[in-house]
Length: 406
Image 1 (cartoon, rainbow, N blue to C red):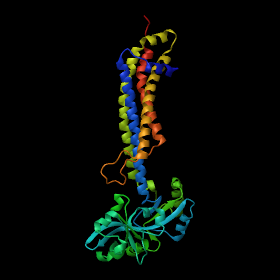
Image 2 (cartoon, rainbow, N blue to C red):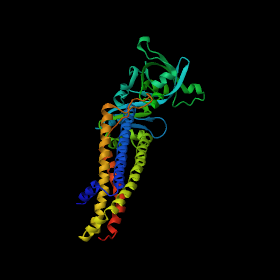
Image 3 (cartoon, one colour):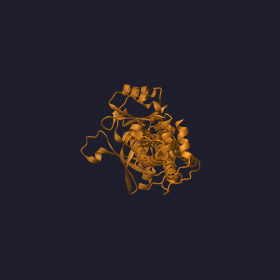
Image 4 (spheres, one colour):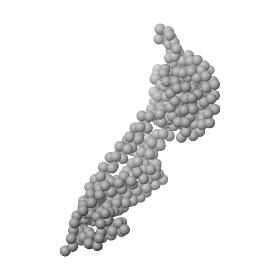
């Protein structure tokens, strides 16, 4: 019944055209703010998925690292127990250290990551090979896979037509007590096997090679590593698996899931997303002031109707709910228009990529979009909540005023 009154008041002709104008402006502002919020949240979701997909090519589902120092010891029995866990799909042993790469007159510092043959099953780096092939070689004939930024820094060519190029690797020994700095370093040669391109942070910092080759140069023991990376069958059960691994190897290790390995990145993306959402809520608050004006003028317009309702026994609650429903109706219309508009734009962007990214230096040339039902519910609920709060003030005044028929 309340909405029936509200709908008749909304579409009825007013004595002052300004009331209609303000009502439609309010509805338009709500629609605009709702549309913007849904679009912004969907774009953030799209970029978040894009970043996660890029990082998933380099970061594993779970990583084990030492709580102190650079290396730790892990015996074969512990490794087998971890591999036997129901949710563990693949396990890769890692030996990682900063190294100096030299090629002709060029040299650069890299994060050299020694990996075993299981690594390509744990992280999908092989799908990001730009040139050459994914070939880490063996300890006696190691290959190296460079980030494209590192390749450019030292000017090495990876071209099968001209044969492999040899690169010198210099690594520090981990347990050397020699006072001569030269004696604390080891040197070896690797052949340039491939170049990968994932994301600038990785491309400019990392290179991959055989783990046994790195362990030889670092003078590590057979069961000594800097990390273990794990691929899960079900990533959603990572917390349970982390606890199971902790029971096997003890609490002297750091066991991190994908989110914990990139806490700063994920927190930054979430904070930016909700900060923009909060700013766009200000547009709805501005619309709320327009709504207060529109409903206040409507109350003045409908003095005679209010008096008639009071004379036939209409309660204050009835009058208040009628004008409260008027505000909710404006909110529903505005939210509906905004949601439909945003849905159409998202559909067009997903299917036709109509809005392009400028600059040409990105991995994609369009704004990525990912629609989530929770965002639609959140935005719609926020808009309606603000409309109800804004409607309460004029509706309460309408209910409390005493008007007599003349």
